[in-house]
Image (tube, rainbow, N blue to C red; front, side, top):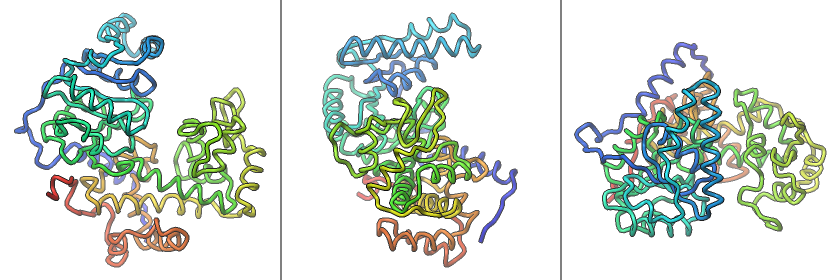
Length: 436
């Protein structure tokens, strides 16, 4: 059953959800916090540089480590330019640029991180590399320091095995651009100590972030739900729906960018190399033609100097040649249901697996990290707007095509009882430590 909440009801829900996300059962003021004065960042690229700015802006001393001098100089140059641009726009006095940059120390060796109270690793997504880094941090960094990874999807429990102090390891998943985006997914691993979680939550407030505590699973909360949407969007392509029709439907729903607009912005060659054959042959073919997104003025879309994408005949031909699909007349409403309802179902599965504290935390993640339209409250809130029966019917339809999208058991129960997604209570966030 479709319901239409008022603006006031939506606003009240979002405000309460945001406040609730800070509440971690069992972690009150009686849990001692670790003192954080000096912060280390590994990697001075887009993510590392952006993450570092949050701490320098808040007054922390920051040591940032790169492997080569030119990469370090380039990264610090971008940080200074970002600060300079903000100052010129009147966000803070120009003289404060030098004050903030004075808090930085650049280094080419992780040995410089020995006395840091918090170290955040922000290198590319490679498990072997991350484990090597954490093994070195275990040897170098003083006892009691928090060792954090910015991974967006990798298994933090596995990363923690590279150390002899897994209780000090946590995920701090910032969103790009990290100096702008408000969301911070704090990922509690199996052995993460209570005081590490409590300190990380407090730090999030200090650096002006919106924190949500989540558990370890592929993609955590935000990206795991995003993956479900992306898989369905890709499946629609093979049914003859064009990327721009999918994006247009999701733009109508309220997203500023649809999945293929997002891919072009991020760069189609992320995780791709010339000659590679991946699970997405359309993306492979585009990249082989040097259509790698906005940066090459061509990806799924063609781009002019104004960076506005227009549908591409080249892309349309590649899709026809690879998929062999006849053009589809699928309407925007069906596209929206096909892409959005699996997100709701995935959120329910996350709750069933105890990888989120509460249903509203999922909405906080998507409102603040992925541009979910505020008038629809978040995936779980929107589930209640359309009703569990409608979501279940769509998931049963999609399951016939791919068993991966089987409806969650709790979704079936909600549909049978007219229950509410917002009221799902599976006992909160749990880790392997709780099971033991």
